[in-house]
Length: 358
Image (tube, rainbow, N blue to C red; front, side, top):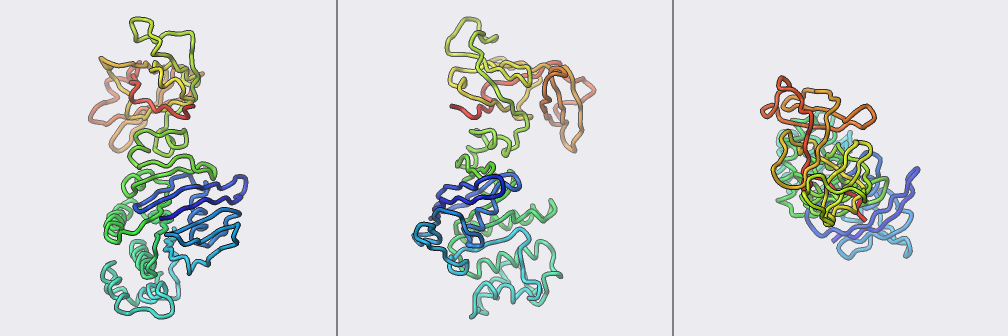
């Protein structure tokens, strides 16, 4: 089990992280410069927090009050850097041996060579390896140290899309086989969704939510979480107390409206949703045809721009020049510009992301 409660001043914000993980793959998702990598470096002992405590499997790695700060080599933590950080003056075998300390086990080194498909590359230097080969050497070196915890710092950031896909498959198999807890840092929602069990998000150093990965993407709780999960349509809202829902035939106190001023739209929602301060709509969830049931909100398409992606249409639209743009995405098999852009799009209440609730 890993327990982390640390604070560290970073530029113009404070890194303030508090979480606990017990097995599986725990993701920290966030934009560049938010404090993700610094969190890993503090756990690994590369950086020192200003205050706090880090405990791994009942071993105290850092405690500011008790003045405990174990050096990296004594923490039993494996760290994979974004650029893999292989020793440039060592070949593949020597890099793997470097993870074993002063008395490397040649038999185990050969096992790692075989397991990571590095046979034939034993004497190659890092500048003679491809990106995927470098990553496999870095993984082998990390595991050769027999760590209790893996720290993976954007391991696919330097790879092209095809190689990234191949390396993800290998990473999935590896994490499944070794059964070691891993902390995975990324700004890619797709990587996090495919590889991780639990996810948290960091905004300007502050960890906002910690949830199972599917719940995080299905029902984000904050604006930051929604943005990181891929939602582009996000707007602040306020409660409208003196209007009744347009879609309800009778006055019903269990319903109300949330006014999104930037979009010029009033959303019909249930009473439970009225505490939201922000609303999000995923671009793929907007509908051309009005659903027959449920509370439906109409979004007027007064102005629009059509952009063509390889497999879908990406339409930006807004009510008028005084409103902010929204995004609608639809598969090329479901719509063609020749039929014209709808004058109205529809959003169901169950498809709304109700964020920053009181």
